[in-house]
Image 1 (tube, rainbow, N blue to C red):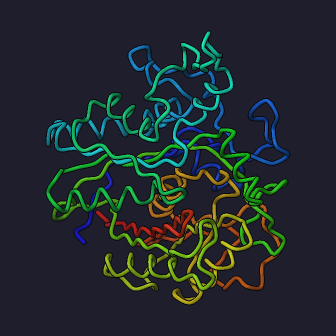
Image 2: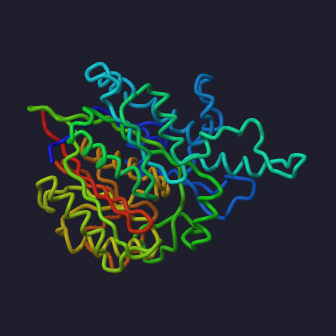
Image 3: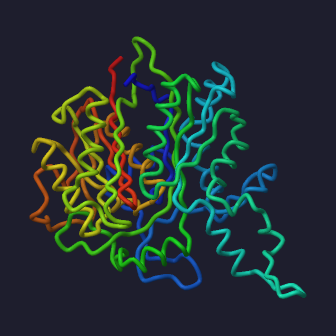
Amino acid sequence: MPALAIRAFTATTALGRGNAAQAAALRERRGGLRRNDFGPTPLPTWIGRVDGVEDAPLPSALSRWECRNNRLAWLALQQDGVLTALDTMVAKYGADRVALVVGTSTSSIGASEEAYARADADADGVRDFPDDLARPIVHTPHSLGDFLQHATGLRGPCITVATACSSSAKVFAQASRMIGAGLVDAALVGGVDTLCGSVLFGFNALGLVSTERCRPFDATRDGLSLGEAGGFAVLERAAAGDAGLQLRGYGESSDAHHMSAPHPEGLGATLAMRDALDRAGIESADVGYLNLHGTSTPANDSVEARAVDALFPAMLHASSTKGWTGHTLGAAGIVESVFALLALENGLLPGILDSTVRDPACGPQIRFDNAQADIRFAMNNSFGFGGNNCSLVFGKVAA
């Protein structure tokens, strides 16, 4: 596929706001998980919560979209020159030629939970939302995309992708197809997901939440730690002679196997990774760093490790960074793409936080310790419920 230039990128997670905060925490092996203090009856688990969201209301002109998810979107959008790069794209192509493609899992469902909890019955016994939450736009999955469209002034196609944990990885693929088809010339892609009762209690009901900090690929792992995050990237066609970071390939697949368990042989994961390598026109040995989906659940990690071992040579440095941020669900794709881009930019290859006992099922590619290396290509895996898989290949072109 033709390469897409990445003109700006950013992430805001439990590690802090912006890329410098992410890179410093990865380098210092300083995680952002803390004991769950979210909601009136917190589950006994650990979470990756972004500090300060409660104290950062939206500007009054955007108050119609007020909710935790859109607040985090607004915070993340202010970081690392994303808005400046977006202004450049709009000046160059026009607002109608810049797409907005964002991913989420639960969007602003936290506002809906509060509205139902505070709903009062009228004289006819019909329960009504309280006035401050009687805003239909915060009770739809497209709330995030609609908010960002109004916040940025973009007038191109506006799409919210909701494929569970692969949502904000698939936005890169969708933007690539739209730019390739000539529908637009550039795109703002990204994703945001915030903590809420549906996420915490829902994943706990599935038996997937650990009471301890998550330990991806550790032999004693027993579940995930949930987190929240937001992130964005600005893409446009790469010009001849362009230097810098690029999206080089993507691969998508569907296991079509089970609602919440991956294909036992890693069929969908393998197809997505092979497709991304083929589209990038590189061999598996060319990849210097692979950010794994690595949820810390027994099933995901063993299946993903098997697929990686079958496809990549032993020299690959592969790791899960969910011990730093928690599993940020629909935002995981953009957050971990940012980690892959930081690896290309500064050579820091993260290991795995808090994991100490290697699962014998893991191949030599799974690394617990950080490393430093100058690499040309990095990959990010994001796998969602229902086996909705996406792998991305990023590259670096020297000046």
